Image 1 (tube, rainbow, N blue to C red):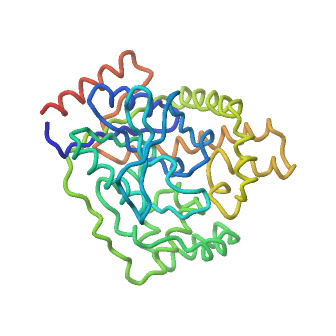
Image 2 (tube, rainbow, N blue to C red; image 1 turned 180 degrees about the horizontal axis):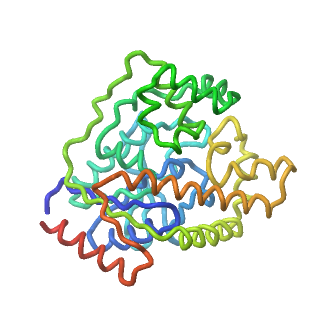
Length: 324
């Protein structure tokens, strides 16, 4: 086995990536690195779908990032899941922070003779991990973002066309209509010379496995999972977070799928039933965007979770690569 291998399990939400990754980690002597932008936050468990196996225990490690030790969740089966519960929801944790932490963890896993398994649905995190990203050094300007949140979509579009027409032309239609993406593009465009980080990793022997399903099947999976998370106690989880001093504006609660939909409910402006419907529809849209992004990545080998024995086919594909 070549010791610079890394396995990537990706795909849209509700395709069972973590469950599959845990099974593969046991079979191929691996450890999981979460590539979820919201599971890094402490206390945001149900809404982000951490779904840790029963009996999992948090353990510290010797790996340090910004004077903070990174820990991992050890499962009852003996596996490990890294980069969950890294910071508080009111702390800034950028894509750059994630990439640096993920590579520190990857190096540690390899040193111990194990296989790193990167798992997530965020195409940006996965691509940045594998290929690097030139704008990682440009951190968020919260004051700038807050000002632009009040600006209309058309004004944001017109500003970007004027300031950086090249960027506007390269954006897909979905991103052109996404205020968050437009604001980030404007934020980066403010820097005359984008900060370049030496963050491009060494060339890794990577295998990218993608899980997919027809939209109708995926939406049904999502709808069931949303209801299950509500029954798990997401409302109580949010109340506890708010009691701890977090708010919709001073933390990521107001921008996180599965949490932001509850804000009108807590303000007395929406019923719980309305929240559930709104949340389900938002998850549908998120799954479509994930697929749109990931389908551009030509390195991914796709497997439909609706096909019989898809997991066995995945194991065969990994075995051929792993033992080469």
